[in-house]
Image (tube, rainbow, N blue to C red; front, side, top):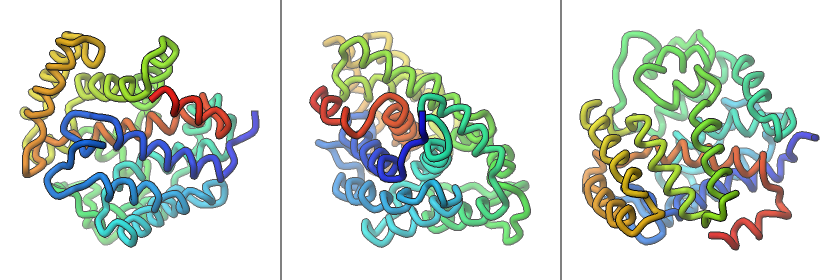
Length: 295
């Protein structure tokens, strides 16, 4: 099958970001809940803003896509709400632009293997501009290093033990494909509403992997404790049982603090990446209305 068109890639990027923020994921900005200074309007505008950055995915580098996306977001939304999403989506979009969407993972391996030093330089600049809360100082591959002489994948390999998004680059995006995309496909094939499928997969990822944003701001032990709580919600049925839905509400109250220390932001980024991978590999522009009807 032919690669995805740049237009469909840009639409899928915007759609994935919109669906991610609309779903009632505990601790995140959603359709009904803001999150300490961040509002859904900012995320919706951010989703619109990054579309043009992906509209030339077939001819742009991964680093160029990330840099442009961060710049456009800051211009339109006033804040950088989506640098993590950009890091997830850029290589996936490039993969969709060069190979069959039904074999996205193979194309992604090629994209990751060909990442350059310039990709690293452009991406580092975008990350520093976004200034994530609690950005660590490290001995190797520090973002503040003025001499970047390693590729973007090499940079991510250096950070893989402390950052889940970096670990995806080092291991060919297993969370996106094996948990996220696979989970969405399974639940939707079973007749699950799209909104519930997104929340359930979000809880599944969070239960399996302590959230990097929480670990960065509140410590790894707190991040692990929150993952345990997510597991307990799933054990009660998650979004699929009355008891589970009550547990989801309690869990949301636990992780929705006014300082956003416990906001599972990295898990939300992984959901956006999973939704994009699902859209380009399982859907088409023509089938999207039917998917939306299943919200």
